[in-house]
Amino acid sequence: MKLLVFPGSASPCNSLYREVYQLLRSGAKKYGYQKIDTSLRWPGHFDSNERSFGTLTLEGAVGVAVNKVQQFERDGQPYHILARSFGNYVAMKTILDVRPKLLRRLILWAPPPYWVLWKMFVRDKDETKKIARKKWLTFDDSFFPSVTPLETMLPELRVPCVAATGSEDKYCGHGYLQYLKGFATGAEFDVREVVIDAIHEVHLGLGNTVVAAYLKALFSETLSASLAEK
Image (cartoon, rainbow, N blue to C red; front, top):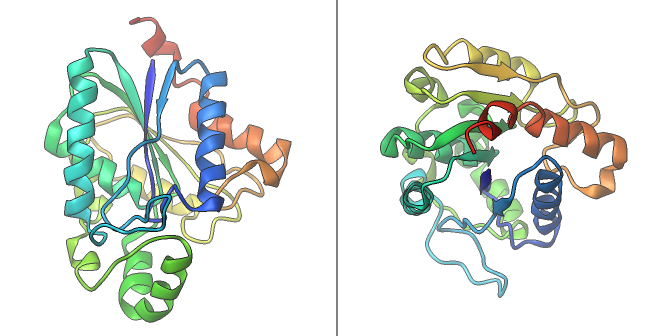
């Protein structure tokens, strides 16, 4: 089984986020994934040389993601998608655009509500731009108008979905995931127990207890049905 990771708005090349994705790669292997692809980068992400190409929009990110998902489809093997933060919006829109046949599971970690994106990228955009630069991200006024709310996409989802967040996540609460579940009328939608003491960016520095609970919330019981198809 393969795993394709959709990053959030912060660049995975940033030092803190490198640890986030390293943990996902090592943790997913322990749960049986044989290939973990964390290579996706959105327009607006800085690369390892701190260079940025384009600005962040949903359309731009989906354009990149569609090409990657089509590549996975051509490989002819079943796979899962794990999306982080803003990557949840990209993953959902990509799935609806491509309608992949080999995708067996969508895993959501801490999708920020639409109103949170408005608060950050419209009301508080000047402050967010300062923070974004530290997270190796470029965006402008075109970002927020490009975003499609998850609530409008979830009714069309036909892929089994797992959703999780942490008790200390400042962007996504557990109640929001329960709220989203009500929109997923066409697919199984499993909201996991809240990961105690987990923040938005989980890394090894949070300790073994938090890390173990985080990986379990994302990956436990997600392989049982799919492994039988191998």
